[in-house]
Image 1: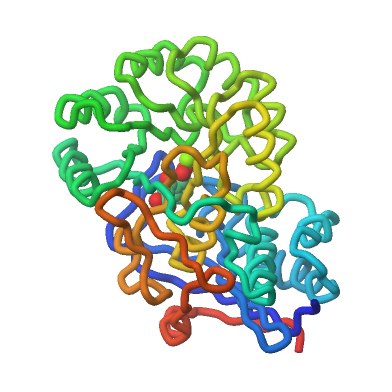
Image 2 (image 1 turned 60 degrees about the vertical axis):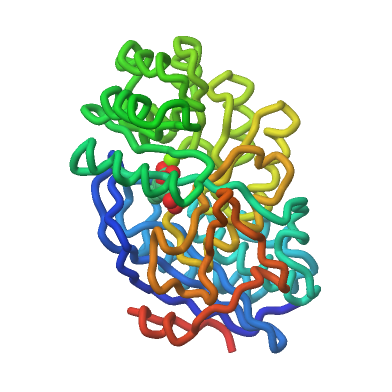
Length: 369
Ligand code: OSB
Ligand code: MG
């Protein structure tokens, strides 16, 4: 199949609640949307690059530049028999995985729609519902944190992750354990510590956490391996795992016992499946991460989460935690048992509200015919 046109939009949506990590606090979310038009079909992708180069070196503007100047024209030049051909076709462009993923994932949506099957089925998924967890940002006070966690547990979510940083870590975790008991709980540091903090981080071993996510630097594997030897708590890597090769290296080095998969971070669905399979081969469970996606990226994530080794609840939650209204109709909802139904229609299986997309659009580029 050949793609006739690629529409790229810079959109901005206000967040329902601010989101704070060790990088800082954000109140709204600028991001890119991709719309592919091919033979009377349309398909969607969402770029998870943020406005700032803090979680990753990519930003909305670098992704715009790389998609319009390099990846878009390459995709338009392809005659695609299967979307697994897209990521290798981008090989000449180094890095820029989030920009690549936005196009690659849209190509999977397109192929699924052309085949009349759900995206999850095309990806090799086996589930009709996925287990949902929440990522709770740093709050103004421990009381605010407790109130947020209460709300999420009442909604049924299957596990709670709290963001930590130096000064908001052991005390926050202690408070959660004291007030909420043995709930499935984990922490995410977004690379806020160094190996010199190993003793401090070992204090978290007392709280029976499911895992500690990305305590050390974003591109580091070897210090995580050293740290894992000093901790009882499992390390989960997020930022560090930017390719299937690094995933295999990290597992071999003992740098983590769990991996968080975000397709944007590794370049799309094909490399995500490769990470998933490498983890499965080594008995390493995976879960699906989140990047505060709109309903478009969120449904992509739901479909990938149906693969068999996604055995832990992910950061894929209901639309209402992020954007109201969402860009899709109906929005993503969570059932009282903390699960989300996987859409069954062709492709991502949800309707994009083009009017809402247009209203949120700050800039539009059109490539191709
Ligand atoms: O580290 O997992 C992360 C959001 C933006 C950037 C990085 C991360 C996150 C989250 C939020 O934790 C997950 C979500 O609710 O989408
Ligand atoms: Mg993380």
